[in-house]
Length: 235
Image (tube, rainbow, N blue to C red; front, side, top):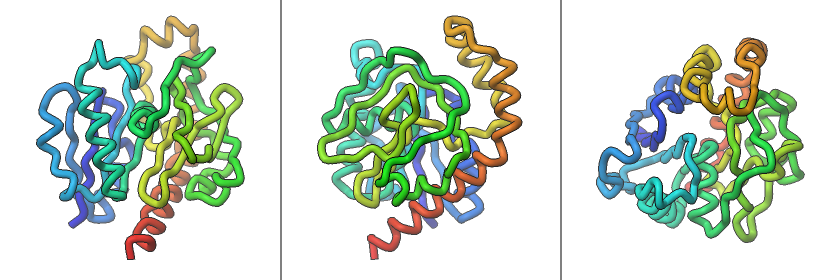
């Protein structure tokens, strides 16, 4: 049985719809709550898929959140194994940082549903499964691309929305995993940020209903193609 370990920074920013998909495919799933336990307890050789999830902190905020140094070290160790790793939002930023890139604040936060514009590399990647389907964004920081790595997609506010490292690592600045039926948890949990940015919760609710089914289909297409391609390389 395959094992997925998810590093979780915030309770409601979990695997979302990715969890039932993996369960249906026979994966065992374990969450590891950041800042609570010892990252050193994770035995990477027993993990088939490592997922680094999102959260409302900065990828370089080591002084405020000392566990980030250990998390980045774990990501570097994972990269060295060339085994499956998925980074989502903060997770993608931490992968970029682990590869030597900076993560910096954007001029304007990106919150809501927006379509991606794909690069040539993106159109030849699993992300092509998304097509014009709007995906969910919730971030105020952005990563620089690691040396030698190409951007797969962009939006008007954020030029680097995704990158891939060989066959094994996929970093997504956006949220493709979100269960839009649980959007209210995001609206409550990030209430202060919503108020600060003067964002309409009703627009986010309505868009969640409008785009939820399409996002679920896109997520399944991307993850299935990525994992299938990785297995091909492993053999």
